[in-house]
Image 1 (tube, rainbow, N blue to C red):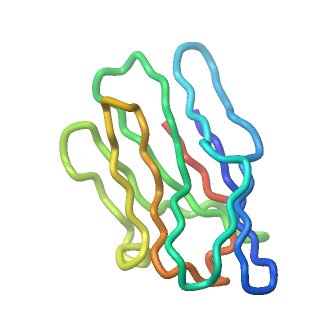
Image 2 (image 1 turned 180 degrees about the horizontal axis):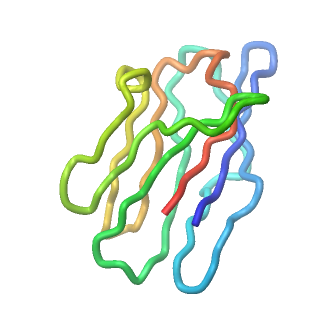
Length: 122
C-alpha cells in the first residue's frame, strides 16, 4: 500500500500536496496533509498514517523526481532501526510510532532540489 505527497518549488517556497490514499483490504497508508508550504532551508514534516493488521509492519519512504523512477529513501521497522540510503542520511529521517501508527518523514534544510513526489508505503 502506498500514498504520496508532491513537493514542488514555487519561487522561494515549497508546496506539498497529498494526491490520494491507496488502500486494499485491511492495510492502507494515508498522507496527513493536503498542502504544506515552507521556505528553502526550513524543516518540513510529511505525515503518513498507516492501518494494518500486521503486528510488526515495515514502512517505507520513496522520492520520485520529475521524469525519474521512484528512489528508496528509507524504511522503518516496528522493532529495530531500519535503513536510510546514504544520499539521504544527512537531511532525511523518520520515526515509526506504533502507538499512533504514524511514520512522518522529516526533511531538514529543504532545498529546491527536494521538489519531488514522496511516497509512503506499507
